[in-house]
Image (cartoon, rainbow, N blue to C red; front, side, top):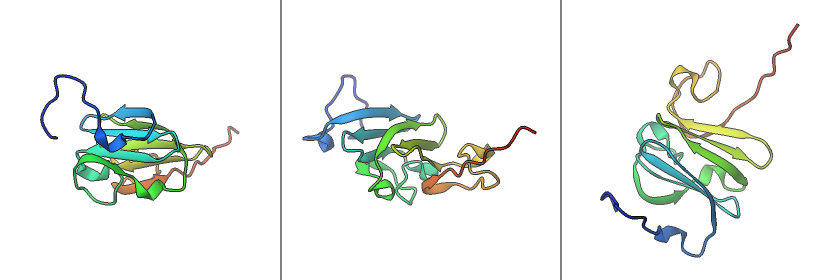
Length: 125
């Protein structure tokens, strides 16, 4: 349904599932189920939905790239990017990479699929 909603409306795609966390970006939304499964929907520009393309999704679609990982927290950026934290402490980002917003160092390219941030701890010498 692409019409504006003046009142809350149940998302039928989640019937029978317990959603435990949600986040809304500027033009996209993210949700986590109790089992750690993870969905996105909305505007797909620059890959911010994490489905490997830039297609918009009018209904929640499971992010298959994170299947097998338990997602525990998500956030949809105000810009065209998203971020997820998994139970093992890994952080994944995807979408628009400009200005280093995805945290992948020199790689500021857009990411169409979730990509793990490889932390580099600098010593204070």
